[in-house]
Image (cartoon, rainbow, N blue to C red; front, side, top):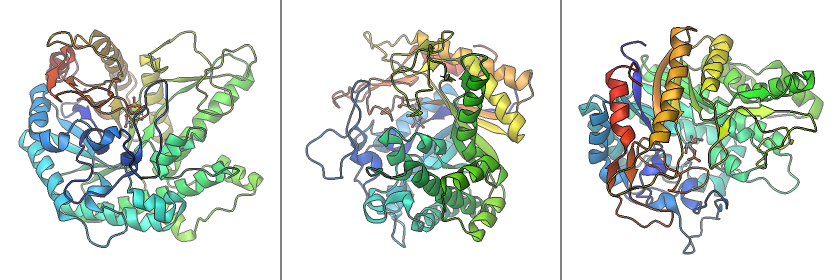
Length: 474
Ligand code: BGP
C-alpha cells in the first residue's frame, strides 16, 4: 500500500446536509422524493409539497453540524472526505447567469474545515441532485442546453475552489441510467421520467451523450483552471457473472458488462465502442451527436476511474435458473448466485468480486482507480449508548483484504478507498434512515424523529486502526 493512500469516507450533499431551502438554495430532484422503505418505493412527486415526508429536506443536518462531524472524521484519521457540491446551492434553478454567493461560502467553510484537519476534499459535481427547475422547464438531460448549465456550474466551482480541491468527479454512477425499468434511476441520474410508449433506450443514449459531452468539456476546462486537477468519472461497478458454462450465459454476462462499461469506455477512451454504434444503426437511432461533441470527447478523457462497489450480479438465460424478483436489467436474466449471501435489501455480499472487477478495469483501461464507495447497509441497533456493528466490520475488512490483493498481488493502481456513508446518511434508493452505513450512528428514524445525536459505533475505532496501520490491521 502506498504511503499517500487516500483512506476516508464518502457522502453526498443531499443525503446528509439538509437545509434544503436555506441560504438561497433551490429545490433539487432529491428534494421532491418522498421517504420509502425496502418494501415500498420512494415516490417522485411533481414538486408540489403536500404534507408528505421528504427525508432529504432535513437529512442529518450536516449543514449546521459539519464542524463537529469533521472533527469525528479527523479523529478516525481520514485522509480525505468525498462529498458533492449541491448544484442547487450554487445555481438554485440551474439556469441563472450568476452563482449564489451564500452557497459558495458554505463550501469554502466546509473545505477549510476539512483542510484544517488535514482532510482532502474529494468532490463529485453531480450526485443525484440536479435542480428540479431544469427538469420542469427543460426536460432534464433530454435537452442539449443542460451541457451549458452544467459546465457553467462546474467551471464556477472549480475556479472558486482551485486551491482547495484536487480530486473531482463529474457524474456519480453515470451508468445507473442504463437501468430503464425503475424510474428512480432515470430521474436521479438525468432528471427524466419516461413517457408511456417512449423508446427509453434511445432517450437514455441521448441523455448519456449530453452528459459525456458536459463531462469532457468540464475536464478540459478544469485542466485550464488548474493543471494539477485530477478529474475522474464515476461508475457503479457491478461484476456480471455467468451462472453456468453454457456459452449463451457467457455471452449474456459479457454483454451486460459491456453495457455497463459503455460509459467508462467513452469517458476513459474518448470514443464510442463499436458495438454501440452497430446497435444504433440496427435500431435506426439518429442521435444528436455533432463533430464538435466527438472532438470534445477525445480531448476530455478522465484521469482516473472512481467506482462504487457493493455487490455482484449473476446472469443466466437458462430456464432452470432461479430469477431474482427485482429484475433491474429488465430482461429476466438476473438470477440467484448460490455462492453468495444476500443482505436484507437483496444486495449480494461478494468481497472477491471487488478484486475481480478491479482487475478487469485495470486490464481494460490501464488507468488509476479510486474506490469512492464501498459499504454495508444494515439496520444497526442502538443498545444503551452502543452500536455493535460487527457485521459491518466483517464486511469492510473482507473487502479491504481483496482490494489489497488487487494492489499487492495483481498490480492494480488504486489511489484511495472511501467508505460510503461514513456518518449515517439518508439511503438513496429507499429514502430510509434505517438502512445505515456509518461509523457514526445518527439518532433519527424513518419518520424523521430523533435527536440527531451522533454516537460512535464499534466500527469507528476499528477503522481508525485500519487507517493508522495503512491497512495492515484489519
Ligand atoms: C450508491 C449511491 C449513493 C448511496 C449508495 C448506497 O448508488 O451513489 O448515493 O446511497 O449507493 O445506496 P443506498 O443508500 O440506496 O443503500
